[in-house]
Image (tube, rainbow, N blue to C red; front, side, top):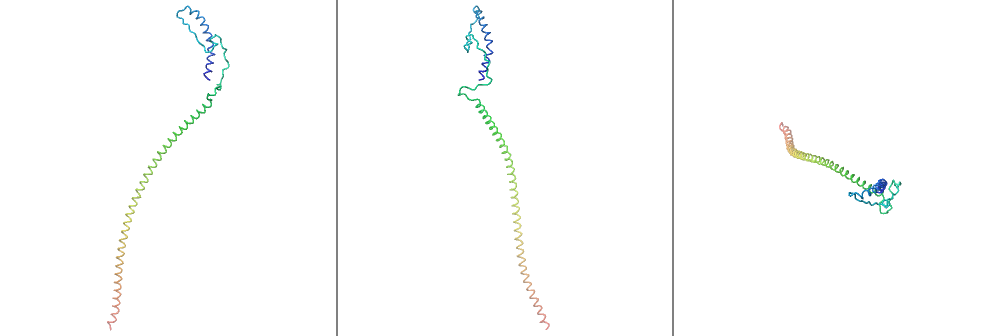
Length: 187
């Protein structure tokens, strides 16, 4: 449509020079007949009026807007805009996907660092718990050995007490015998 408008504008502008050229050609025909360097050049015009020498009247009605196409096979203009809008939306979606992917990668790197930190902390806690268990086992073993020593000492004391109890019974018997014997001796 725009090409037709440009062609019509050029056609209107070219009419005046074409008329001048025609006058020159007439005088050049007369001059060229006698000149050996002259070449006879004929121009073919698109419009038959120009070839006959008639001038078409300049059209003052140049459409400011393009006419809708008369052929039904041509695609409407709004369809081009709709397709362009879809391409723009597709490009924006693609850019958004790239931005989201970059954001996810950044978060993934951050989470990886945090997980490494948690892993080292867990390792430290595990090591300290293992050390505590070892200390607790050592303490428990020492407590058990202490309990065994105390039991053995208590058993010794019990046997000694039993021996002291026997000695006490013997001392009681001796005291009784001594008490009974002095009474019998003064008589």
